[in-house]
Amino acid sequence: MSWESPYRLWLLIGVLGLLWAYLFLQRRRSRYAVRFTNLRLLDRVAPRVPAWRRHLPAGLFLGMLSLLVVGFARPTADVRVARERATVMVAVDVSTSMLATDVSPNRLSAAKSAAHGFVDDLPKQFNVGLVAFAGNASVLVAPDTNRETLDAGIDRLTEGVTGTQGTAIGEAINTSLEAIRSLDAKAAQDPPPSRIVLLSDGANTSGRDPESAASDATEAKVPVDTISFGTPAGYINQGGGRPLRVPVDGDSLRAVAAQTGGGYHEAGSSEELRKVYDNIGTSVGYRTERQDISDRFIGVGLLLGVAAASGSMLWFSRLP
Image (cartoon, rainbow, N blue to C red; front, side, top):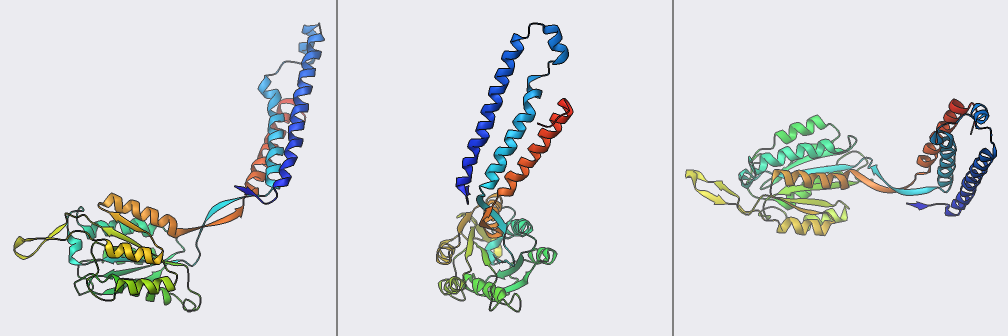
C-alpha cells in the first residue's frame, strides 16, 4: 500500500494528542475521586460503571479519527479487476494418444472434466471459445459468453472429432487466433484482450510449424498458456490388444509458451490439471490496477463514529 498524499498522515499526531489528553484527564479524575472521603455519597452521585464501558466510546471516537486521517491521505493498493471484453480460446488435443489411461479414466476424459471447471470459474462477461485439434484444428464453439453452449462443446470432444490423426499444435494456435479476430465487427481494428490455453500430450507432428504460429500470436499480443498433460508411462492399445507407448512430450509446448509470453505447465493427473487451470484462470481472468482505497478506511471510520455515539448516548445519555 502507498499514499497519494502521505504528508497528511502528520494529522495523526493530533489524534495522539487527543489520546494523551484523555489519559491525562482520566488520571486527574482518579486523583479527585481519592480526595473525596465520603465514598457512600460518591457512589450515589457518580455510580461506578465498568471501566471498558467508560472508555469504549472514547476509544471508538479516536479510532474513527485515525481512520479518517488515513483515508484523507488517499491510500492506494493493487486491486484485481475483471477484464472487460476479454476472450479466451481453449484448445484441446483429441488425438488417439489422448485415450491413454495413465490418467484416470483416460487423458481426454480428465481434460474435459477439468476444462468444465476452468471455463465455469472465468468471469461471466468473458468470451470463451473451444478448438479441437489432432492432425488439423477446428473451432467447435466460437467465442461467446454463453456457458451452456461451451459446456456442450466440451462434452462433444471425442477422439478423432477433427477427422485427421496427428498433433497439429501450430494449427491449433492459428485457428484460435482466427476465432479471436472474428469475435465481433471491431475485433480486427480493436482486438480484445485475449489468451489461448492449449492442452496436449505430444510434440507437433503435422500442420503448421508451432514456432511460426507462435510468432503470429506474439505479434497479435496473445499469450499462449500451454499444458503438457500425461505421464511418461502412457500407452494405448492397438489392434489385437498390442500396447503402443505414448509418453508425454512437452518440448513444443514449452517453446510456444516461452515465445508468446505465456506459461508452461505440466500435469500428470486430474488433480494436477485442475490446479493448473486454477492458476491460469487467476492470471487470465483479472488484471491488477492501482486504485484509491480511501473509501474503505473512511467507511470503517464512520461506522466507528456511529458506534461511539450510540454507546455514549445509551450508557451516559450524552455524546462522546
